[in-house]
Every structure is written in structure tokens, then in C-alpha cells.
Length: 271
Image (cartoon, rainbow, N blue to C red; front, top):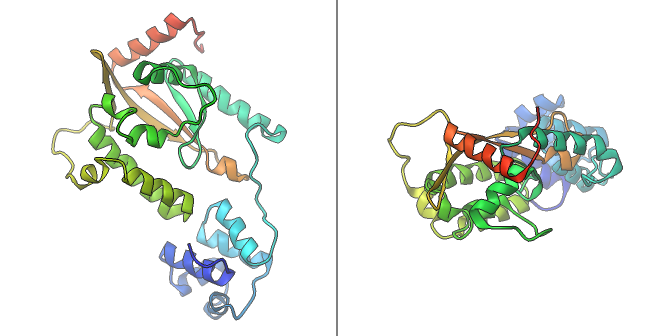
């Protein structure tokens, strides 16, 4: 990240987004000369100008706040806990989506893949693969996927999956400019086998419509693909950074197994 001055941050974001001064000035509705003065620190922005530039740059709400602070203004966007009273309706909606996904797994994670919520099917899948989780212990799904001793031993196509996943984290790091995302990427890259997996060329075998995660343990096989959703028009940092990831069976054998686990546990499935 740049120096914590407004001018340095503005210049860094413009170059990070690949905009010329002329292009960004046009998007923000100001003159190129004015933008140049702002980037050089020869002019100070108003709050409205910071908002216009942040919108033109299409930067995350968290970084919008950082621009405001650098310019000497109070942050504009809140970061609430999901348990906060004014988040009750959103939290209820997330719980509804997780419940409706039963008997198939679903999770809610933050920008850095820290687990925030999960449905019972997700718990059953994890417990089948790695055993019971410690209640209340933090879980990072990125580490669980990439590390050598958690999910990797049971993911038969780990090399292909991790190659796609690392590229998605790289895209996140480029988009949000957060040191936390860069740190996550560096941590994942340092796990054994990751750099070797990235250096391999994609296989030339026949590909299906989506990349499935193929788990196998003790003769049991599960093939799942995922869909990731985000909340529309979030006005809160926490909500903008949420992801809802739903897992679906890639074949009827996997679907039957997941339904069977739900029946054995006595869970009521949504109608």
C-alpha cells in the first residue's frame, strides 16, 4: 500500500486500476489539471470530491473510508457485527439461505475465507472428512483447502482445484488492495506443493461444465461443485465482504449420500 496521505493513496489506486489521469478525471467529472493537483498534494479535496473519486475508482467501502481518513474526514461506511440488532434482518436472511440449501452444504465466509456461519450439511461433510471440529474454534476455509494436512489428503483433484482457488485469491488481492488479502495469498503460496501446482499446465482431458471437488475417503466418493453469491447493494463493510458458498452434488450418488446423512441425523429438510 502507498504512504498514508490522500495524494499517495489516490495516485496508487488510479495506477492500480490502470487508469490514466485523463480517464479517471472523465469518470469523476473533473478536469485532468485538478486531478493532477490532488495527486501532487497541491490541492485538498472536499468530502464530496473524495466520494466522487472513490466511486469513479470503484473501490471497496473499506478503502473508501481509508481515503476519507487520509483526506481528514470521518469514515462514511460502518462495519457492523452480524449479531448487531440492526443486522437482524440480514442475519435472518443468511440463516434462511443456509437452511434452504439442506441437505447440501452451505457456508457464509468473509473476504478472507474465515467461516462465519454454516448449515448442518456443511458440518456433516467436514466431520466425515476430518472429524469433529472444536466448538468455537476459528476456521479458515482457504487454509483448510490449501494446507497439506486438512482437506488435501481427501481431495483427489487438489492440484487442479488449488490452481483455480489461488488465482481467485490473487484477483481479490488485486481488487481490494488490502494488506490482509496479500498476507493471506502469501500464506497460501507458502504451503508445500502450491507453487508446483501453479507451474503445471492445465490438463488436456475432457472437461465438464464446472470444476468439481472430488473427495474420496474410505471408499466413499463425493463430487461437488459450488456457487458463490454476494449481497446486492451492500451499505456496510461487513456485508460487502460476505460470501455465501453453496455446494451442490455433481452426480446422483453424491446427492443420495448427502440426503442419507441428513436422514440419519434426523434433520428436517426444507419443503
